[in-house]
Image (cartoon, rainbow, N blue to C red; front, side, top):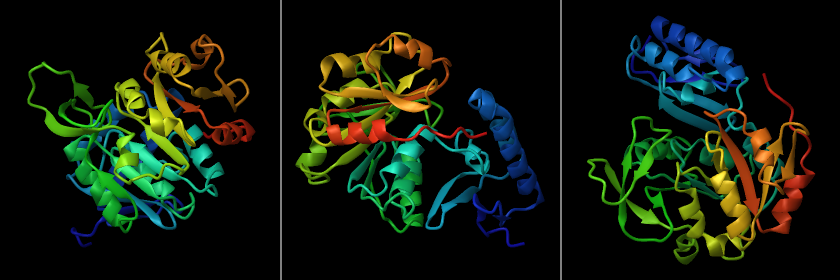
Length: 321
């Protein structure tokens, strides 16, 4: 076998190519680990991935997601290796929403894009081939993000920027996990990566988005979501829906509280009792929905009747195993 051949995995067929015996065993272990930990929201899975990573060479694996999309990440990556489980659906409620609105004319903004999974998918044929802009603060992550853009024909744009309340200035990044980096507050000494700040409304000013355009914004910026929303007031006042993460450990529901009390947005969330999207009218409802402290729960916020109608008309989600 040619050792230089890329390792590839097809989620539709389960076919693995370019892998040696040890790498095949590693992929099998990573897949089994995802299946075992899935009922616990992959609690402990990252530990298993780190153990597997000690016995395989540092190589890239390219996963075929659908007929015109691939997604690359390091073999045994502690976060993305769950994609080797063919039955695993990443962020099921978001996946369902984006499939339902595939035929809608909108632009996608992927804030905190990481390696770019959602930008790859939303710009694919299966999800409607929407124009997509992937914004990632970490320079290291942005390298892998650009790699995925190149593997998919550069069909989405990449910006290495941190999302903030206003455009201008620099911040530094900190953290050991690429999927959980954080912005370091001003004045704290650090040697972290430095990156320029951009506000969401600047995407209108810079021509990345048109004022009359429908927009779907995925906002996963690890703790600075409120600042990001403050910097996107004009954008959110239009035909936009923003999808952001409520951390299960936040018993005060800070993000949703801000959206409901300080913006014109209405907030929607997948209710496990109805398996449908419901409007959050009472903040206390989140006490029932957010049951796991280590899990992020997506909330959908919009001031647009168009997006509200789409959320409320969605059929109940079908649970995966």
